[in-house]
Image 1 (spheres, rainbow, N blue to C red):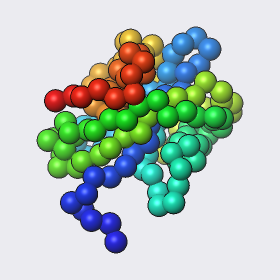
Image 2 (image 1 turned 90 degrees about the vertical axis):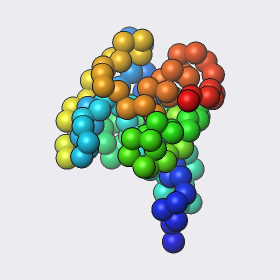
Image 3 (image 1 turned 45 degrees about the horizontal axis):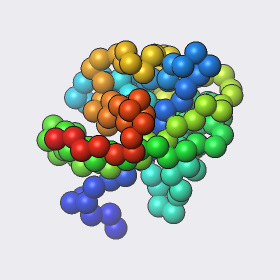
Length: 144
């Protein structure tokens, strides 16, 4: 049984196209719509890579290959705002195919390709931090 007093683990995937843009979704939730890289929750017994592959297929219809873990974020800002504490594993992939679709319209309004230095706002903090680590080439940096 999961303890609600423990952090949850999420996976976020930075998918980069041939133009150097990354896939961003306009997420829908009860607080406000935020932009974010695609991803979701790690399930019991699942590797980070298999969670990334599953989540991307479920959300976007894209098939990704060889996702690499590039960063870890400890999302305390989300905890301050919502009381939910997440640790996010950020993966990166360039190798993908398929027709981009919005397969979960109740969770995401739309998908778009955006330049990583010019993310749409408001942007979900875990996603923004993951992209920041990607741009800076660091696996982890302390955010306060």
